[in-house]
Image 1: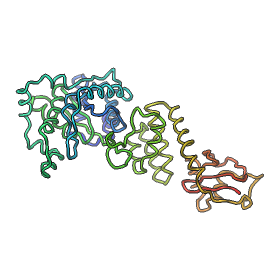
Image 2: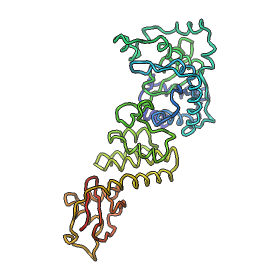
Image 3: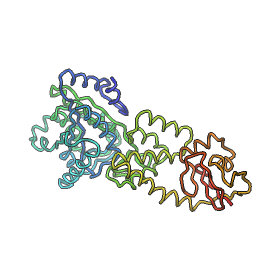
Length: 401
């Protein structure tokens, strides 16, 4: 039960609702591996964190010993996938498809074990079909069924053109599931209709229908649309560490919880603790840094993650620090011991509207800087000297005079 619950974490849709439980029980009873399918149309050469949401779930199945099948839609990419919006995606040339597919497969190794995965190309069977065989496949699906797809229905209602090849696309994707005898097909929630087409076609061929598992769509750095190369709102799996860090820091605060859930590999307990820190008012920048370092550690290394944070601090935070207007504070107004104060007492003098417990939380969370250096020990002695600059929280900038 614990394994099943873990596999269901962060999954938006499982169809049928008890489908995963049934497939796992069936595999155990028959003593075999489940065949888990994930299809990619190689329409763009780079994978990003949005793709990684599904890939990381695939890795969980792989770690349990099941067979991962990465289906490269090299045939379907050449006919053009409906975008799910109001126009079709332009088909690619064969050379573009081959080049993008090679890049995809190379990048998969950042998350899954490619050596233990099965890589297949749907051109291997779709290119071999005669026209009469294609007609036979199409005959198993009605126009009414295709109109259940939201964007098709909307475009039909609005008299927006729908090309015939767009209607054929989900049928061919469904036929892929027939050819590989798929047990579970995974994808984003935007692929629900195409995945259910696989269930339908398997049933018409007298096969046990696949279970569909749809993962949530990670929003991109704009905070609105799903992460997409065409929208220029992505963090790529092959981005350099400094670039990854900077992009993560640029995301809207509203994405912090979403990124915690879908892009990090923290435990459930760690994620909950970080959410609580955000809820009680901790500076969102601190949480973004934690997320950024976790992401970079996954796709690069812990040392590169630390180096990227240092680079960001030196290049951006310190620049802001130096350009800020600092409120002058008289040293003579402070009661000190041997010309120094503990950090918490110094902050208490500067921010008399905050309690010491609140200041302690700020200090321990790294929200206090002295001359651009982050301070985390509330009781560290700070020598009181002229021109010392202190940053307290997001908006408190002070300079001793």
